[in-house]
Image (cartoon, rainbow, N blue to C red; front, side):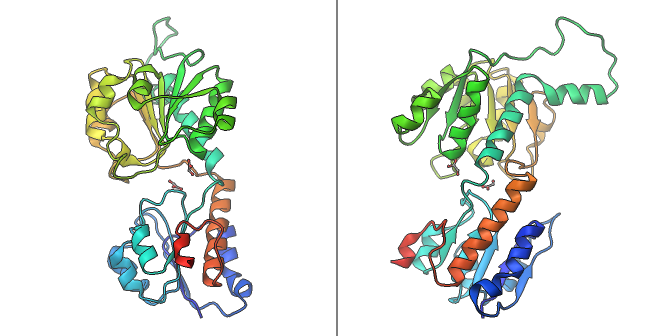
Length: 333
Ligand code: GLV
Ligand code: GLV
């Protein structure tokens, strides 16, 4: 009789699917505990206590799934179904060592996240949020040829850092804006994917030097932490913007604030933050920064799809099957 802990309430469709899980599993589901945040994440001591003895965990990105939590859950834990595509919050090798399955929610949020990257790109190059603030402040104004000038996109270069599913979807949209695409990836894309995007694989430094817009889509790993720091910003064009819809710690926010203040780059659009949910105070004072609270996948349809995918993965794991989005197949041998 599996017990399940859900560390943040999902949208209704996903919660209903979870309610029906007993039927899917052909056995009575034990207790399903759901944490009702926000505004706060489940306090860590509560998480450790409530995880005790569960068979399944549905986690969100604010929950660190590490040896401590796995110890607290105990040996009956079969699956951690992350309600996210990113899994930097999970110690996957530790889960594998203990025979715990780990899944994520890929594909379903690719297009929504690429859309948000473009929302930030456009907001930055055309100073949309700044203009909105300006009017809301009741600032006196009159149309002026020199007012609030931004940057063009057509004929310019979009640089994608980390060209997986979301990076490719972001690149695809660039064609509609008349931009050329370069990308930097651990491996060059297969020709059949790169060619329709007209995307050229370049070294990181070349990407920085040649791009007018740099959009970050790589996972957070020890190699990508602070990939964007003082030296990267110095290599970018003074007219360039940086957009991050991936993970906050890929960008050194203190260095970004300096780069913006010194005019080393034109602007930045951030959906994710180095010490999320905190935002570095200096960034809040800069009009060249557009910020939104981690909304990449935040559409009605996408959140339903993510929640359902997490529940499907959970069900498969609890039933002793192979979840569709299994990230550590070694567990099943
Ligand atoms: C959100 O950031 C996700 O990884 O799904
Ligand atoms: C994430 O799923 C990506 O591959 O970009």
